[in-house]
Length: 71
Image 1 (spheres, rainbow, N blue to C red):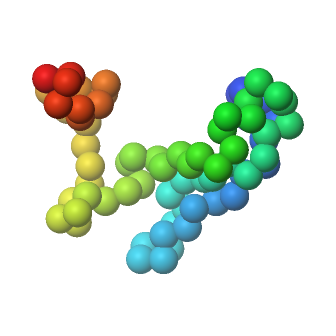
Image 2 (cartoon, rainbow, N blue to C red):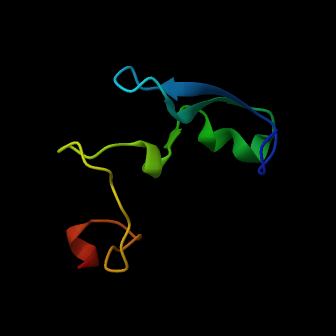
């Protein structure tokens, strides 16, 4: 049971560090939540950047996205 209703999820496991870094929606039991099936969630604070450093959110970081149209 999640905040948005009943879902079946599977963990996303990192073989490099051995921890669970997120989950993938396998099934949604409510019709209004079916759009989530097949999508995944990664917990940002558990994922490393391409250079091995932790991703971090600063006040300068925009949460909206990185599309050129947003600039």
